[in-house]
Image (cartoon, rainbow, N blue to C red; front, side, top):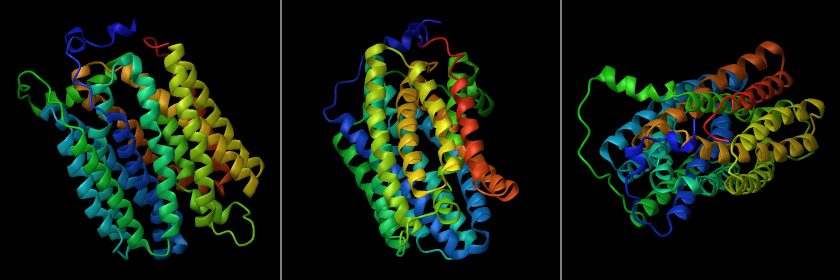
Length: 415
């Protein structure tokens, strides 16, 4: 199928919205703030809080909390995307999601039991995914297809920039959890205020969509998965994310229980070193991968090779469970994941079935981001406790990423 057949003619004929100065920098800021919350809380604050509440069962407790909370992420992201499509606006959803996330993070910092911790993190995941669904839809809304790689690469820098900031904030406040949660919440709320104040909504022209039954809405919601290319892109993303988060979600415990650290280096301090290493590599590969994929008009080779590399580098901490091994792993894993996410996001925007359903279908794709995070904590916990440690976890994560690389091959509509 040719690329120009992937989007219905009426949608492609819609006039482009007026150019908004500073749109991409504001999106970079919003995505950076969002990733600061996800990485800072998920990598440092939440595992630290779990270990303080129940040190004997920290792996299992973190697995349950992570898995259950990811259900909320999976559900709220596509639903919020569909609702923002229906309303024809993004800014109200961006702002509401960020401000309610600030309130949920404030609650999370004050709880002292595993149950309340789980409830609080579920609320954060739900509200952050309302915010994320609207932010994610802005690129296919307002960026021409020929510049999607560059735009996705710039926006994709939110992961290395935001991840670094989030982990540094979290590692500095690991002994003052409430402060850490409030600072991260203020970051995402401030970024949302700037985006919505300086970048006006461009409501869709045309009549309001007709009301349809709940069954028809569900069928339409999942209809994008019936499209061959979108379905394979979904599968590849899901496998890659599952492999990545099965390992990264337990990095604090890996450093505590598996890796021999230099004398005097604590696991939170080690994460504060590893994260910038990974994120600088990720930023480099995000920019280079996105720009080269636009210049050469090639997406699949970048996505497939980077997914394969992500699988192979999981062997480094197995061969060398040392601080040097983790530094090498972090750099190579950052290179692979950054290129994958930047170019795969551009690829997905080119195989969306209908442009007017962009937020809904990107929300469906985000099931491939959030859904595997439901499974990843359970998989990781089962592997670590059932197979005897973290070496099998690295091997399982690597195998999943390699299979994800193979899932890119059947895509036909994008080179």
